[in-house]
Length: 218
Ligand code: GAR
Image (cartoon, rainbow, N blue to C red):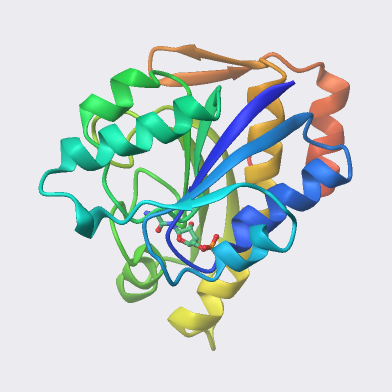
């Protein structure tokens, strides 16, 4: 059974989706540690009530990014983490951290990358006037929000939308595709080939995944 280390900064609804999908047997993995850089993140409460180990490592307590990342790595290693999952973690990681967990870090981004990288992606997409946005799960590489894409879901932008309404509907899709990506990751069904990710999943399973969410694009 693979160990997950989950990094959060906020409300932790993606973390909750991962917990639920481990509990219902969809993801065969264990969360060995949750780390929040934000001491008041609501996600901390979600894991405390489940008895999952959680630590606060506040970036403000460190004088450099590298020292902060060393503390993250020490904690992740202590908990024997195989894969690092960025579930709404709002700090940019440097190559120091990324090389340590090369090809073993996943991030979820609330837009259809490579469009609208960076912060407030939902509002960026809304303000631009796109008719479709969505969310992306990708491997983390040095260039922020540019790593190999594992899975995306498309969300239409509606006539009476607001950035908040759009954000909420994107989040619902995040809760579907992130567990799917993590399941394939821990089952070693993802093969990175250049900047592409190949799913080593039987066609029948792909169909099942498609049935779960008709907006998943493949
Ligand atoms: C999610 O929408 C996630 O995609 C986004 O933060 C939110 C966290 O929500 N991540 C980023 O913008 C990363 N650049 P959650 O704490 O409820 O999972």
